[in-house]
Image (cartoon, rainbow over all chains, first blue to last red; front, side, top):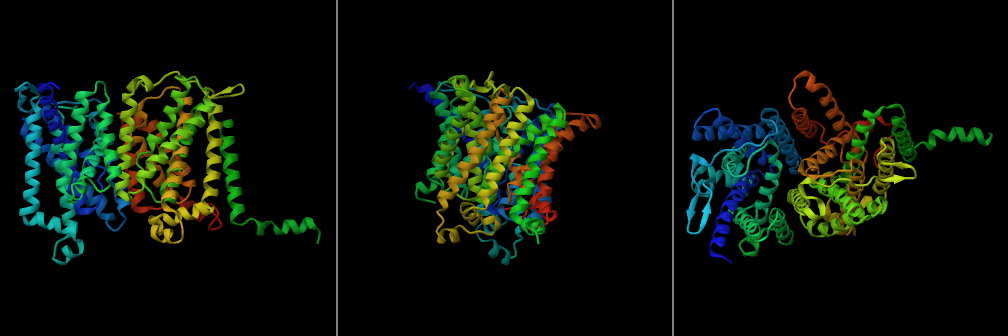
Length: 290
Length: 343
């Protein structure tokens, strides 16, 4: 294989891998604390992208637009927990999953009402021009995607590992009863995790809008991809989600680079589903660390 | 006492649970088969829609209500039937009827293979995998351009025909669909009361069953789950095949996650404890959709699709919060015997 092609595939894989990792982390944050598979996560991503585009086209500069979008989406996440999941906190996990699905429908409907069915896009952040790196051409948005995802990952690790709030969240995830006995409000932690996941989702939404355009109906497909990325590496551990996301992105980039036609979009998720079906506890288990 | 009087006196005794069920099915069948005679084109089209959703939802109810397994990917099975029928009839010139049966066989076989791998998983993880499988199916039919026409879809699918009637005729479609729906209903109800059905209900952890207990009692749980999944896939496939021959044009977008989510919503709102829930759920949701399409453009304007989505979401949330067993138990209360409608 040509050296430049390989490099191109590598960067494209890193880009996609970052996106899938960031998508998967949203599921991880909610799932690890509350054991809820949040089917509205993709809608938060869509909402983040759409809101940023709206604010940006209103003439608000990029950074405040993104911040506004993230705050509004995070509030939507808090609303999902407070008004829909919290009243049903005693019911089964399956009920909660379908509650998030109901919320996803509502968000999608509102988005369709507000923005219509058109696809929207943004220029690369701060109009970053494409970069020539050795023989490969990198789209201006790619460094932003990789950089912000990296920040997100480092931030999450610091948060979960170093801060009291993060440790309390982990306590709820590992031992809810014990956490309650230590005076941690599980409901408050759950509210926090939903808010945080929605905010993270919104950041992903703004990151991908310059790459893949955003429309009201892309929430559920994004949910499916994020779930896949999170599951395949093992949703119970952040390392698993990161690994899963990167593998997803790399496989997609490699198949896109080597196989002509639209087959890459089917091959990558198909391989991931197969990996998952044969190793149901995630890739980290293969590596012997699960 | 003459035998005739004796027989008349015994009628109330004989109308017990099983008979009630037969009576209700009979009345339902008569009702459904007489509706189109009085109704115009528009109600019949809506009823055909309800028929499609009902059949797919019934399959999902078997899976969710009896085996306690969640699927968020039933659109893929529906699409599998539709695409198999379309490909067999247009690319391979097979007549529609054998194509329908072959499509159901193919979909069932695929379901068996996937089920064998998938049912090692449980609960939410399984739901996530079915969601991903639906995505894979969508991309698969979108990318196999030579076989499926890709994103453009397939056109000129031949209609189903019986004698001089073809499925281009609305009434023929109506009867075909609803006769099949009622036959599947009878089959589902019988299944629920059979040994296999009881074994399946024993698996449903959401309804107080226990997989471990079932296994101890000698139920091969893996086999049971696979069989009910195959059955569920065959229901969806039959509906898909009829859909392909009815619309004669199919495109990948129809079989995306939104459809799966909608079918799951119908199953929950209708009620997962009985196949009747399929008709209640599909009827209610399609009914509300039609009402919104009628009135919302007049009242507020804008894209009606948005109000439909919002309404679906609100109904699903309200149903889960206040009516977790769906509409079936309400209808059950109206019925005289406890086991009258429900298995």
